[in-house]
Image (tube, rainbow, N blue to C red):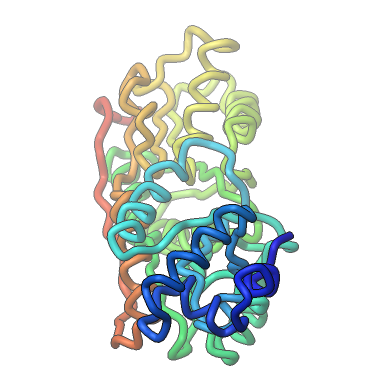
Length: 327
């Protein structure tokens, strides 16, 4: 690999002169700069980004850390993030897995947006203590170098639970996300509170994983438990993907069950596909693009030393077809 030392040798100048020329410094004459740039081009010189970042203390790259890339959730979030970072002159790299964590301590990126449960909170706090700038989307951490941009999970879950209860349902199933999911824990806490303050409502929890297969398994269990019952069933899936898995299972295995009459399903996330289900899926809506954009804006402020306040992404309920329950 060609280095500035090789360019200096061929140009018969010092290494510092080459460095100045490559960086457009006025300390080098235009004639010398042109000659050095021509030699660099001839030798196919590629700047060493890692070495440059050690000197400038910046890479102009932001890392977004995700638990995984499955499902339709992440596209809008990342697009919102990318749009803001591009405006601010930053590039975006998307990471997953524990090995990618080293990008922070090795200063391969200028800051990170974290929606990744493989990061321990203590690990993130240790990076913040070393001066790394972080925006977290999936936990609550208090540190001057950490900003929180959190989804209002509790409000969304409360809207979904109260909506079903108001329709007369007295048995409510919830299908959760993975055990380590902050969002799932927040949603379950809110649903539990809604049920506890409403007399005569029973809550049944089914563990899920935010994937369609979990919705299919939950539907199979619910159908087995409600077989022969004349009372309609209410289900709150903690994301739309599981709700759509439930739709798929019922269509394939119980075509006589009328969704919206005999079983009422509410999801969370308002995926595009949710608007095409028959009947239309009731779901909790928010702007994923705005979430990503706001996270990027907050991180740039942290990097620039500006003051920031923790932010929250607000939610609304989109109602599907009428869900009057049999009492």
